[in-house]
Image (cartoon, rainbow, N blue to C red; front, side, top):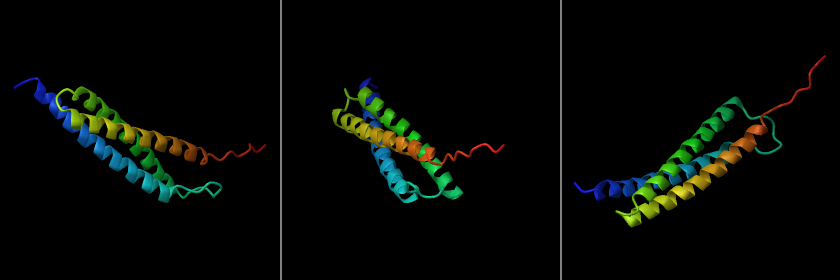
Amino acid sequence: MSAQQPRAGLAVASAALGAVAVVMAVSTWVTWAFVHPRAGDALPSPAAVVLMLVLGALWVLILVMAVLAVLFGVLGRRAAVGPARAGAAFGAVAALLALAGAVAFLVTATDWLVVVPRQR
């Protein structure tokens, strides 16, 4: 068994993981577009809040997958340049989508905070 075989596996894993991360990121964004409350509306229902929290957690998971795809792509670039480059590119796109989703989640979550003045 040569030292090149594990690196080729990393390149293929990078491509697969990056592609899955991009599909998950786009799917999460589509779901977010249907679920999130519009600006200025009343507070969302508890079910919508739970679903948005799950989507926020998915963006963190996608970000981890994207970082792993880029890392595997960099480590496997010597053995299989094509899949490694594709995996790193998919990982970078997924990371950008996940970071944008995390920012959108934080901005939306700040609207859930209702400040009530203290009653004396």
